[in-house]
Amino acid sequence: MIDLSRYRKDFPILNQTVKGRPLIYLDNAATAQKPLQVIGTVDQYYREYNSNVHRGLHTLSERATRAYEKAREKVARFIHAPRSEEVIFTRNTTESINLVAYTWARKFLKAGDAILLTEMEHHSNLVPWHLLREEKSIELRFIPVTPRGELDLQHLKQLLDGVRLVSVTHMSNVLGTINPVEVITEEAHAAGAKVLIDGAQAVPHMPVNVQDIDCDFYAFSGHKMCGPTGVGVLWARAEILRDMPPFLGGGEMIHEVHLNHSDYADIPNKFEAGTPNIAQAIGLGAAVDYLSRVGMENILQHEQEIGALAIEKLKSIKGLRIFGESEKRGAAISFEIEGVHPHDIATILDEQGIAIRAGHHCAQPLMRKFNVQSTARASFYFYNVPEEIDILVDALKTAKRLFGYVT
Amino acid sequence: MSLDALYQEIILEHYKNPRNFGKLDESRAKAHYENPSCGDQIDLQIVLNDDMVVEDIRFQGRGCAISQASASLMTEAVKGKPLDEVQKIIESFTSLMTGEGEITVELGDLEALEGVKKFPVRVKCAMLGWTALKSLLERETKS
Ligand SMILES: Cc1ncc(COP(=O)(O)O)c(C=O)c1O
Image (cartoon, each protein chain N blue to C red):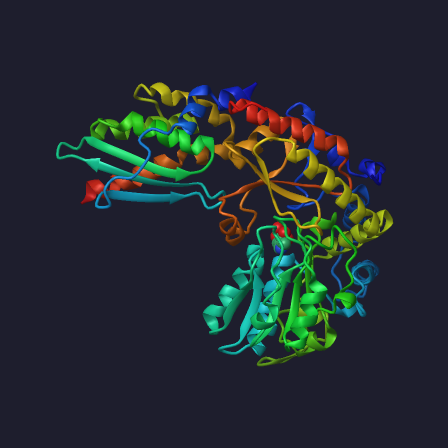
């Protein structure tokens, strides 16, 4: 297995005990930890050049503006966006998707148009479309999920009939499945639909190239990729962004304001009303630098190896069922243990210093599909090591024993 | 270890073999409660007779050991009791969970749930059935 354990020392938070045991952090799909390089960058901004961007003519403001715009360029390069002005800083994936729903979809969709989603979407790629449907009589359709946890693309062509937008997750936060977004995009474009990809789980864990995917919109969150909370990204093609009305109105996003009307600034400022999340965006730039140094190919390889090993070892526990058996998958692993509810598992693991997630993972429709209320989920990142899997497996056996089952 | 205090044998036993589990006739008063953050759910039905005594009570639910065992223990504690005593049990159990207010009645087996107090995120689990009971009684005594 590729050894990336040397990077652990960059994450001070990992070096602590919880309930008297060394912390084992396996909730990376919820949010990732931050390396010193990111913490230091944010700290330095506040210590040395905190000031507003695009407004001041003074030295600090110039420095902040430069760092903020530099972060945009780094993010653009990271996802292979052709132009950095196509990168819009938002708060998170959720806001990025809502931005598309409130501006592009609101302007261009009309009654009777359809949006194609999938049964494995996070609530943040469902609810914005429910809200839009309340306003316009659009139709929502869903690509089904197979029992193996993959998208069933057999009837994609028929499903695409009359569809104006396809919005799909790149990697499932529950099943770990990496979806064939290139294939879906090609079919969608052939049917005249635009494509939005929810990359919240993909950008942190694998190389992403928006030009290769050829999608129209791509959304992700900084906090899941070692960046600060409070910053996310919407990437979209420049010509589409220029056609879209602004999202929020205020300072920063205007060209000229009169009492009764205003002209909007060009992209990206048009979509960044008000003082932006300057420190967070600069911190995200540092996270991108950091991840590039580790190497996204290395991260993907590590995740596939540690994921496969974890699945193999978890399967040795009798009565444990894993949700999602796609060949192409990341290291977010959902499971249940017969007779021990996921919340009880999470509590018992926490007592042993292990952080996992239990619940519906903001994917209730998917839970219903698999006929469960909730699952336990262990999700790995490049700083996790194989020894942590063994401790996890032992702790799960303890949980079974505590509930009176033989292990 | 505090885990043993949380998952006492009596709790696990009620989780595996819940008492008063099932459904009463559809015409009986019913409350459905769900914890939206975790999906635990409970359906509770109750029969109050003319003397305001809990003649029968049933629940159905899905969820963690704490929520289901607490509901099961609750049904045992209140079945056959007059309404005013049931109210005292509800208040006393709430006090046991929150550490606020007074415990004015013998809680018996319910005391096994005291360990939940040390796990603040799980108190909501323990209270699920009780929240359903409270709202059901409010409705029943109004009508
Ligand atoms: C697939 C997926 N989409 C969207 C989101 C939402 O991300 P955020 O809460 O950062 O907006 C998440 C995060 O949980 C996710 O896993």
